[in-house]
Image 1 (tube, helix red, strand yellow):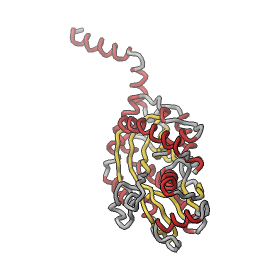
Image 2: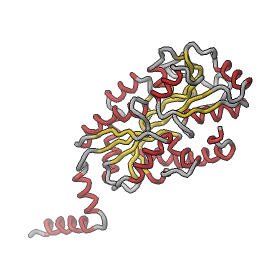
Image 3: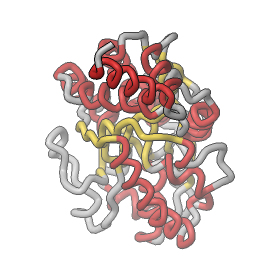
Image 4: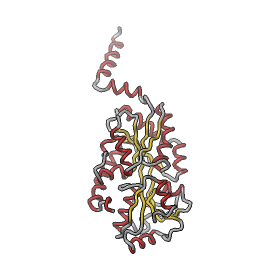
Length: 323
């Protein structure tokens, strides 16, 4: 045996003998061994669900295995996130996330998950929150709605998909600034919210601009909470330009359980970096009036870690479970 060959074999043996490296390499080579699940915390047909269903076939092409979407609605997304946090960390169970709920739910209550239970794969989109009423509502403007709530505390109902969601926190901040008190009503997802407004069961709803714009028939959007007007809906003013410095949006991303092997996590991150740039994914988002916003998993979670203190401060100042 030549010296060169002995050296190469010795190097390979040393690499395989390194603690934890051989199992990680073997697991990566086998992954995925079965269908990969993307768990969604809301009912089918909502924005988060549609994001996941757009991602699934594009992710399949890049990981060489099937990807299925599983809906586990409840508690503003907590049920689904808790199931992902407890899942076997082998890359076969992933979860969609919604900001700010990913951070605010564990602050607001004794939740079954925390940020550290997950590893970020990628943030995918951003979708500003909006305030919407029925097109025949007596509230023609946001000023009308606020005046009614000020005149009749707790008489005006405002629906959202859950306590601590961006749609709810928009209300919390707006109430704090305007001295109003609405009655907050929770539904499990976008379709139920839409049906409640269209059926005149509630006076107004907090729902992201994308799904509202995709279903604008018989709806009137009074304001949205983006930093600037959306090019999809230039007719809708921002809360800031109406005199209420509130910015709030749903950032929707994809996570894995925290202990997922680094090599598997890296493959998922690389695959998602391609998915979010895929013309088909961009086209689907645009058809739903939604902006792409890619952020690589590690950088994304570093930013989220810094945001936790901001939300803790907001909770101490204005406990949103009481609003």
